[in-house]
Image 1 (cartoon, one colour):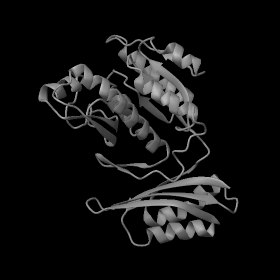
Image 2: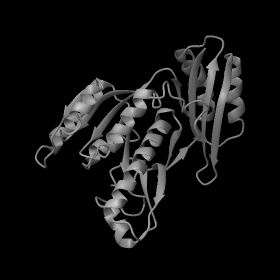
Image 3: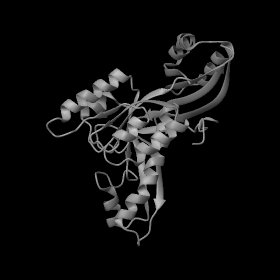
Image 4: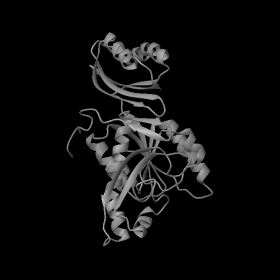
Length: 294
């Protein structure tokens, strides 16, 4: 039996859940997981539903037939085949902890994605990437070459079919044009618990303020630096006795975990944009299971 995921957003109205459930029942589909949120402030409805086709319905058929339900309620909807892995392009600079964590989770099946390439403006991780049989693209960035490099990056995204770009500590600010064109398709990890301590040296800022918690934030990239809709966050406790270097070391583990959780949520269709915020539904049962342990 094929497994599918349905994502729906529309204005709040009576009968939405009944209409969707009725449609799936009529298609001989069995619902295995469902989550919904009715935003009272915006009047928007969000739903994610996992289901199995027990009658042999195909993805194309489901999409075509569901259009009538969507039209009735003014829905935006997506139906995806759970067996098809999303194509992901990773970008990294000189800090490799997030890249290495993503590669490990990908290798054991904890992140069921198809990594179509890794882009970097430095050579440090070329061997690591190539040893995983993943294409490595070295693109040195200078003020003079920045526009040309971004054009090459966009061409690579198009050629590879990448559906998601993950900035795994890629220390370059993307242009407004790229952010707008890739809206909702670029995830960044910021080494701070946003909205506090934005910019390039958040751990130093946190140390100087004497905070007792430091954290990391994964968010969608927008033209406004470090202002994109937040997907995932976490913290770790620090004390007055620790140095700025301690903050950096402790922060690396949090950054890796937060970024991987954000990617996991996105590829499973659990994240919905809701203005400047997001709706993030819980993971479906079994979605964290790895194909192997190591």
